[in-house]
Image 1 (cartoon, helix red, strand yellow):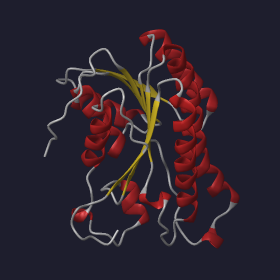
Image 2 (spheres, helix red, strand yellow; image 1 turned 135 degrees about the horizontal axis):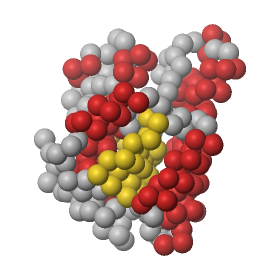
Image 3 (cartoon, helix red, strand yellow; image 1 turned 90 degrees about the vertical axis):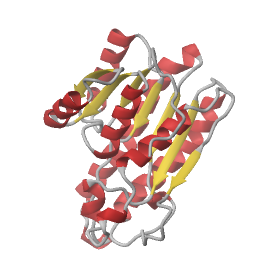
Length: 245
């Protein structure tokens, strides 16, 4: 069910990482439905082409970027284009994420490096560059998409959990640092969402009983509908029914 709140984002510029599928794709559709100009980042061309076809009738405008957020040079190139073509950045959604799953002793250093590079470093460097756009004009919102594993432990998810704990810590610190510049920073931490990543990490779960990507997008919509004097640092989103996540 679509929520009644619907922020008017006409004239606002947003950037969404991990936009090609799942939660990121749903957030892009929501932002476009609210009238925003959305810069969507994905590592692959095909998902962005599919998204572009899906949103043609929505009031906002979509600009796509093929880039890997784990590469600082790629992040710089995207932000250079955002500043050149849009002249501002009002909303950053750090959603890009990958996982490696299994027993801790089975991982090698490359597994840890890969997950931290995308889930932590990617969000860190995107936030740092976004702040350079937002601080001079004293406005903006950075919303990080975390996970229930930010504060709950699950077997076979040690590396993924470590990355999401780091993202939560970064969000809490950045929320304090950015407050003096009238910039809000939040994290949304959903339980199991029906995405390919969750299917990979928890094949035992019934996907019909999970949250949907649109539920997370609606939560982001709620945050963006808050008045300027209100801020929410973190939201834990779970399915209302009794489901063993």
